Length: 85
Image (cartoon, rainbow, N blue to C red; front, side, top):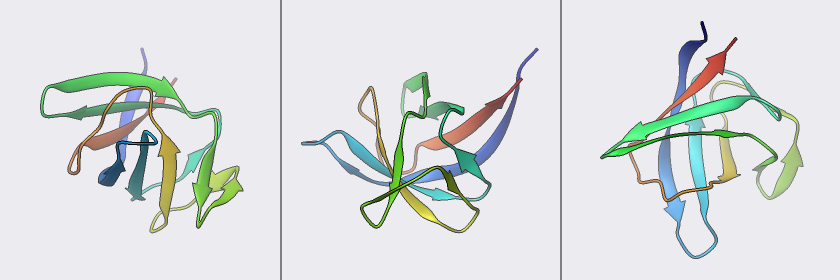
C-alpha cells in the first residue's frame, strides 16, 4: 500500500501556461508521483520536469519553491503530497 507524505502547497498558479509554484517542505525529485488535494480537486500526476528560477532541476529540497506544469488546474492553498511506494 502506498503512503503519502505532505511535501508542500501551491502558492501561485499561472493559468495561461498551466504552471503552479509549490513551496516545498520536503524533497521532491523528477520521476516522483504527487497527489494534489484542495477545493474539490483531487488528482495524481508524475513529475516529468520542474524548475527553480527558470532552470530545470532533477531534485529540489525543503524550503525551495519550484515551478511545475500541472495536468489540471490547481489553486493557491492546494496541498501537495508525494506518494511513497
